[in-house]
Length: 81
Image (cartoon, rainbow, N blue to C red; front, side, top):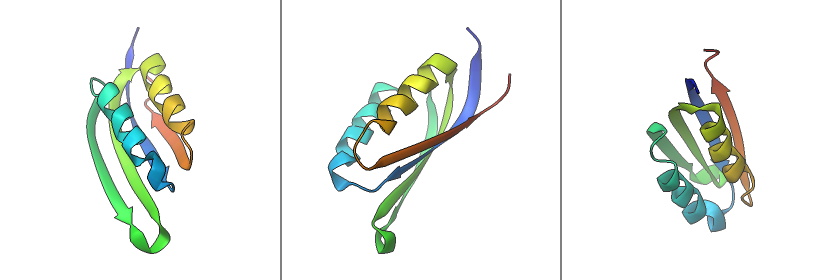
């Protein structure tokens, strides 16, 4: 299966979910090229961007697992090829 490169935006509004988000990042470490996280304390949200390189199935599995967590919103954009 072809690999695609993309970016995943993760907004974490529930402090209860932070450790679960980090656990998922570790589980999917093979497709994560890099990440940047910014705690936006004034708005009580953590903003994380992740660069991924993997199959659409792997990337969808990561984003799907993240999106099922309480207080977590996920959006992704992938290359077309």
